[in-house]
Image (tube, rainbow, N blue to C red):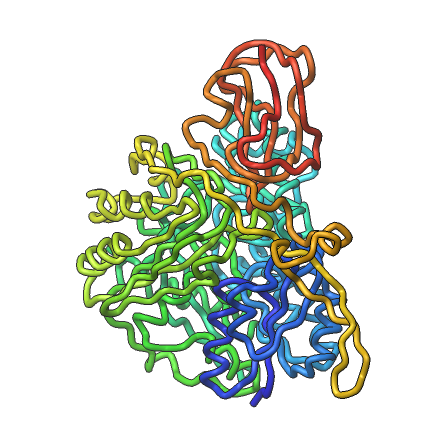
Length: 589
């Protein structure tokens, strides 16, 4: 068995993997960026090493630095978590070539299934059909127009590499094709390092149902159970359920068999998830995620299994702990993703900041997976998932009631979260009666009427400053970097050091009533982020609702809209600029 595992990730998944490893008697190694120096995943690990940098590209996506830390820490295995490098075939190959065990599928399987185009081809060879779509990357927006005219509008553009809804755009007409493709490719490039996209017919009212599969190196493969992930916004999941409600058992068995065939078709090993769209008693292959899913806890609760333990055992060469007929599923489990977003009026605007208070829920059959505690900060540079709250009961109705109770007991202050939206969804009659689809949240859940009381402007915690001192350890002279609060640092020292984080002690106010300053002509941004693209020019006439610029925050692109017709008098930002909450970016007169 492995002696030490390096967890190449951050947040709740790094914490979750570390806990199972500890129960198995395995030591863990955490890695961290400058912004995560004091993060929870660092605190729970046995060892922790600095990556340097703040952005994902500078830190968690730095292969050379991770390989260096693997050598220094003497870890004999690496768990990638999800996101970042978890579905990067070259990274898996680099890790394996260095003599370290990659706790995941073979690089060849990641290459086949990580590319959504080749995965469709592999599924077809296994006799599993997908939604009508293309099997080559799009090179020009005219291809979208041709596809839409042939198969009908709307059309879905999807990132060929990656998942989680990143890089996905729905095109409703030929007029939208060019901008949609540019935006999809841009977001895909930033999220996954690859910009290739493909097309699919966009189904009218489908449910998103995925099947958890496992395979070992001894030729065994099985499906553990399905999850319904239809409650989505911006093609990203909000609420997941296991098992899928109102789902015929004969379809469940056929879908499970299809998922196993897809896994075997690519020589799969370890944990994977085969995703399907389900509509009118038919299901279509969507994609395969070659990693552990965010929503794996609900499968664990209805089966009583530890899927991370299975991952580690399979990676160490063990056979699957159970056979297909030994998998048992009981009751119903629900997971909600508590994100740092303001769901007011259904906009789900990013809400980074410092969590001043976090009291987790408690009670029977209640689980909270998180990478944060009171006092921790949610950065604009990373995913906005704060916590996953999971409940179990012996039936779905009771599980819904338990989750409502649990969410009402949860206290998170300092940032805005999606909890009010979760409550609105869970208490909606159509959700309770399973009359939903992947489009339901944004079209019929009524979130456009949701108003969330925002926290008052808060003083941000003081940023530490770096001070290099000379220390003597066991008679050896060494340089040590200390990170001190400015209030603890002499003024002369503070002036000569460099800040490791952004502005200090700046009050941050949140605003959701308008993304453009309420029609005053002062167009402000509702969250901190990076300007991706400015869409207007000086002197240009603009109308209400027109997009003025694209702002990236928490790995999501957000259009900043005009709420007052007029002429562009000032443009105060350029592409690549970083802006803070409430900053004026454009002036309209």
